[in-house]
Length: 329
Length: 214
Image 1 (cartoon, one colour):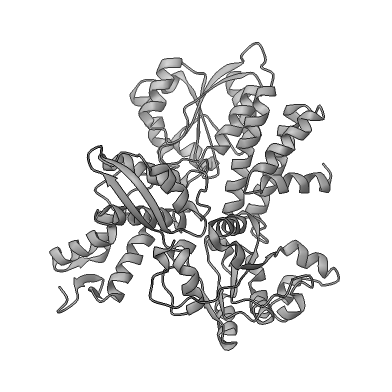
Image 2: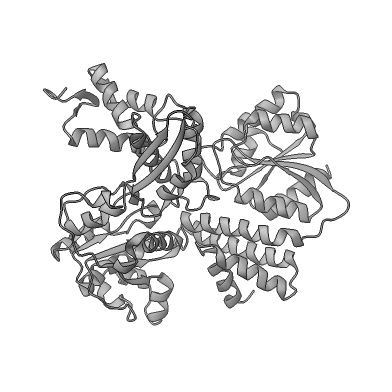
């Protein structure tokens, strides 16, 4: 964790207030508390739709009224503790409208509202964003949570130094061809990165297929210590994307080419490639984790990497085709 | 079941840490409750979560709830299983497995317990099972029924490949095939030509009893 803090920024005060519901929220709260953030957590509140209904028994059709006057429905027993960051974890989508008034009461500077399941995405996401921005509160909706990297907002950035897209420092035993040690520089908020890392110490890396299978199985399987709870539907493969990011973080730390690097290489070598054709060669069939010729389980991962390469100025996209950026390569 | 009892069960099933479910089972066993009764009560809780997940007008539960509840159900089975009494005469032999590409096995685990508690001998192939392995086991142990499970819509089509493999190995007419799991529908089951579809574990049991008697 120490290495992750040497980003060149001064230490930012980070008082976190967590509003959550259900196992996804519990998992993240537990992990943050156990991984050095216990004293930064100033408040934790479970926000359930049942509680709102119980508190307003005379309200008819509460869900169509809540968005009109969300202030009225903020729970009376919500402890008010001035904080810097409001973390919203897995609350019911209809309760998203309560976040701006809650943020106001807590005087937070930023809100992190990860979406690890489409069904949990707030119904009025854009309105919530606009309301918060009007209040001068920065908000981000990382999808899934482990895609969080750096941020322009110093409060979110301070959080992201320790939790978000996984990063490791790995040493290899090149005689025995096993992974000798893994240091977690940045854990995923759920803790899956560190849980998988523990299982890889001593694992042979000579057969890439076996290593790939191990990484994805440990990440996806609900028998694992801290397994991924993100949505796994092929229409929205957030769990699979999280697995890809973990795999590439491990590969990067081992000094092996990551999917993003290989995608860039193929574009540079090809001069110009069709986006869809490239996606077909890169994204493997569901469950085919051990296919060493392919690079990602989720098409979302492929598109994330392409967007990042474009933002980094390494490639451009013109009419569905990808090319090296002029003058760059 | 009272609302209070159901709320208790939902609380233990949705506990991410997994300690509550073990304590709950141990407490009820200590009070002399029949382990099958505890299992049935927990299954009702699981069904309630399933209903809340599928309620399109007001969804109360999400993927993470299903997964955690499933895992806690497996923990419960670990605690309860040593206390289940085996019936002496096996009604039939069933091979079960989750298809290739899918590592979720809670449905299969619950189904296995229900089958065993109703007199079936169950051989569990585990998860991520290839068609060749399904066929090889059918050839080897000659079960009455082959049961396949799939939670993911992306892997459910593999069940059709298993059926084709059974045909290729001249085994299809030697075993009855039942399919189930959240990704499976009755239409799909008909299309791939299996003998039965179980919409949940209890329905699966009824279908297996019926298959054995035909």
